[in-house]
Length: 157
Image 1: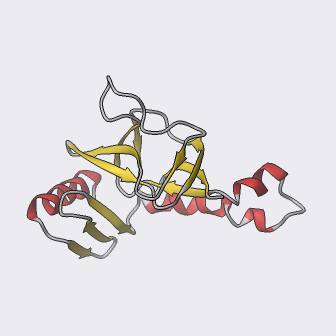
Image 2: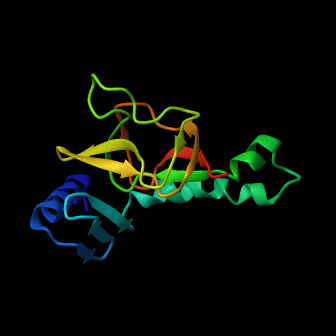
Image 3: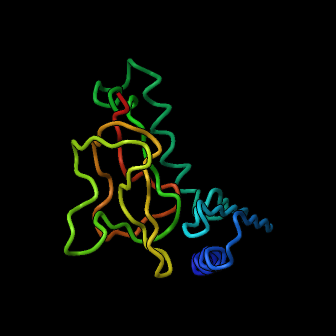
């Protein structure tokens, strides 16, 4: 399934008012849920897109071997990674003339808007699922992002 087809599916679900849509084909499984009928969130996609995600995930098991990991990596293991729920373009501010939603060092609470991701001319607010402090912003403004790509590191303590 091509990215354009997935984006069209997301757009269709957003317009239809459906709360959840599941699609299973030979090489693809996708579940799209809408929070309030206006913001679609892709939950699962097992097509070609997640393969790079699998290559980036071994970073988290490495800190379990303390003798081979530097202290900085051990500190990162205490952080919560906020990932992109959809494919699109990452924006740090609501519009070009407005300030960024968050900066490094900002305290955030659950439900705080961290950024927007534009997909098929729909701007989706990405909200925090945890409270804490922004430690690192992992994506540049106006950059394309993939499903499940890390966006922010948050210190929950």
